Image (cartoon, rainbow, N blue to C red; front, side, top):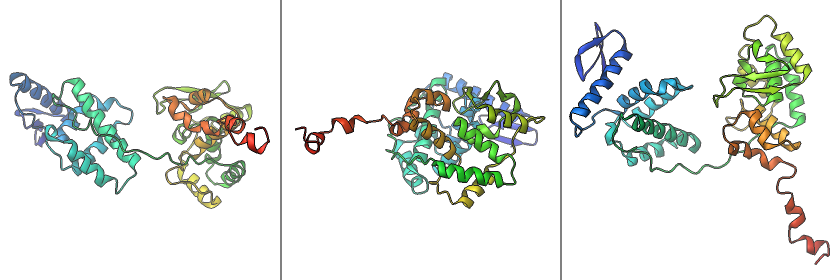
Length: 321
């Protein structure tokens, strides 16, 4: 464990070495731990879950796109489990934590936390930091119900666009236009820079999947965005609060948790309903896996249409028996 003194930071595994920076003390603690394990491979690993999280973050976690939130989440999980000795963490202990957690959050959120913890232990095993088995690897995820993917009808889109035009937030209508025209995430649209709009396309950078993607847009939207963003490095101001207010004022009902995603769902749903190809949709949305995109497949006009032609009732009601 890293401790602080008047001279700086040190590890309680080697109090003789004091460092000005906390991260240097953490690196030294890892070195000392590895040395002790090499000298005595049967030495019990007494590092706490907090210690393990620190090492994971130093050696791997900080390279991840969402590293700050992930580290905070892992710390909270550890605290709820009373920061146990990591090598003594059992599946039963984690299952008890998870059961208690489901009283507060959805099974989807609980499964996501489970996945993060499992991935951390797997990475530490690969790095050689721990020698024991992943304590949560044999625990199965909760079965999740497929939730409703709410999309806006054309009447609702008209109502929404009219309300956005009345909003004092000048960025709002343009962000909504981008989301509806490209299927982008709200954060991707809101953070656009002028350089990302060129040659009749919008290029989204630093996306959730880690891959950049370009989506063509109509000339009217292209000209509007170039004019609005002229002379600005970041085109738009933060507008989620204004969007939330507009949704409230128009009385458009949305399922809980779908405020920022309803425009993305609307693009994808209308794209498929008008005969768009699901594989093309995957590339437009930037999904890593086609299975994520397939949740829109049932909206296709041709989806399961053979049920009308081939069902056994036809022979009876049409006298074809």
